[in-house]
Length: 393
Length: 160
Image (cartoon, rainbow over all chains, first blue to last red):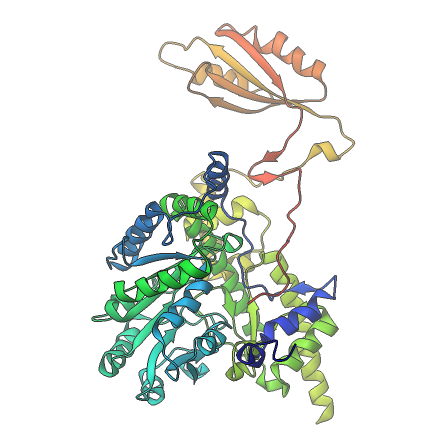
């Protein structure tokens, strides 16, 4: 058959993570620090609620938007955390993970040729989703000197008269960067001035270690122009349940619900029942897990200081993003050699955008014992590289 | 820091002080002082080791004994509890709400030793009305630790 494939699909770059995954999978004894999901099991009471829903025979579709009970709990949660009110009837959509919300959110708002601003390094899906929605992705390169936060100046410089929407990926995967209230106030001002939309991906909102997470929707005039995305994967360790949600203005949510209805029908019913339990009785679990992540984060930052590896201090998610520029290798070379020589897998920063060059993403969704083992190997490796360099001089 | 510190050492009392300071984000001296204070206040009562004796060649039998007693005037249950906990083979004594009064856990070398203890020492105490002995056949989980299964990381090795 001629022209069997979509040119747009073929032209999409495969994820940089995928390539690395293939190498790692072939090594049985590799220790990995490359995982982007919690190491905790979903808390038992949440799993139990999922099981119970199956026992009761709740095995049918829910409404397209999702269980009303769950949408209501989500609205309560956002009101409690952010002080912002959403209408569960018209302004909330339950999706298959935050990822689906990113996809249909973009498709619901962009027209061919519109520009989507994507700060990088960031999650791998934004750019391909923007392209498949017919938009033109415009990359904003975040800088370590700004702690990988988006500044008003960087935003202002990237905006053109074609700009439709800004993706705001904080707390950030892979850098661990957060945006504090003052940062968001400055961003909001630029957004209002240029009258553009925001897609705020706040999947790591519960995992911040400095101040409580602040959302852009709390800023004046932002609620009506923001698609707020969150989900259950990271906060409640529920990645495999595939459950997320989007909140936003009714006009946008109506279009998203339509796309969701045709492509997905509804999010998994079992997961939705479990999620109701998570929101009602999961605060303590979140607190415990977040405390454990923070301990590991401090451990890693201290270990980097001791091995004199440069790393800005991240205050969110469960990643650190150390700089390896001193070794004169690309991120990929470093990661591949580290894997070959020490059997430890980390993800090259370039998997999250070209400007991730010179950095590595190290996940601390691992037990302290595991981290200790792997970081010991990193210290050895770094030491060896420095010795080799000295010999060459 | 207190709650977090207690939670950590409740799970791992052997953790190195320097490491404890690092993961709590405080100075080592503060950890030392806090631990000392917790010990003085009797909040930290000991640093024990969890042992799964099943996996050794040493014979051990443990039992839970429900004990119904008559409380004593002015003393309530305290006197009788003290009489019971003084026996070294008794590993714990709890005052319990519900159908009986004291829950006593006991460790011995054999069934015979335990039943001997119950019939000779425990039941013969004046205020003890009745006992019911339950032998432990298998420990699945103890002190928050699952004994029957090891944690296995089944996640994909690399994911976005």
